[in-house]
Length: 368
Image (cartoon, rainbow, N blue to C red):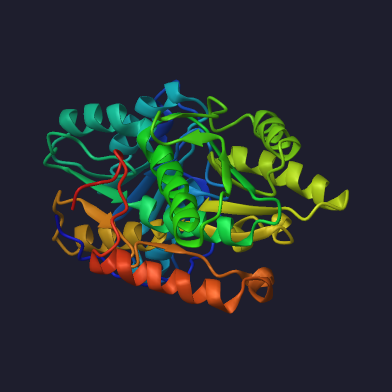
């Protein structure tokens, strides 16, 4: 599989939205009408579009990062942009049909849950191009480019970090929906904790996920923040002081529980996923130890550029530590609390994973 996308990206800013043309508005059952943004640069006939899952573009996670990548392409490439948010899973196909009707050259769909709807619309519209974040098809589809990530690699580092900084000897994780793009984080995190215990002769406990049994704690969706908050409180009651939610906006529930615990005098920390939570979820920056990042913005922008330049292909982009598609975010306010020795060990772990000396395996890992 090719991994030719650029490895660095300065974050794009979210711009204002305006209503798209009447043709898309004629379609019914959509979560929202497609919207379009304008560029002040040279006009272009190329239109890049994006459809969110039910988390919306302000989820402070994968939808937002992907959307910001498209908005950056709008600014950098002078393209036109349409976007539409899905309110429920039933909105996926109507929203995709609206984008095709609106004349999108490339439509980016965000998330594993859009896999079936994207396949249906791509096969029904072979002249339209699509890219899907966090999903790859067993049988490739000619006009769909998967954008996928081996997040187990960076999550392994996060697990080692959590085990190396816990004060209680207990850390935790939970997921939104039990799907591969969620459990891959949890697998890597679990293995990182296990590796720390093996290397240090420790017994740091992990709550919320048993990799061997593929069983753990899930909220059942990416929406109910109150359930995420209650799960996190349960972990705190069992002694956990570091929690990694893999649940999109539900992670805010974990942040709320940890913030309350901190206010009550507990030394607790949060590990975010998908984006650098210190930047995208600043309300939790006082408890944000680090984040397991997927560089979705850069991938989206580069896929758009490839398509605009006439170089579209359906070879999956696989983000790894080696190509900087995934990474562990800076420690920001907690940098001084992470021992120098632990930082050195994390850098060595990263090198060993890239060199193949340390194998990070998850049943959900994409195969490059």
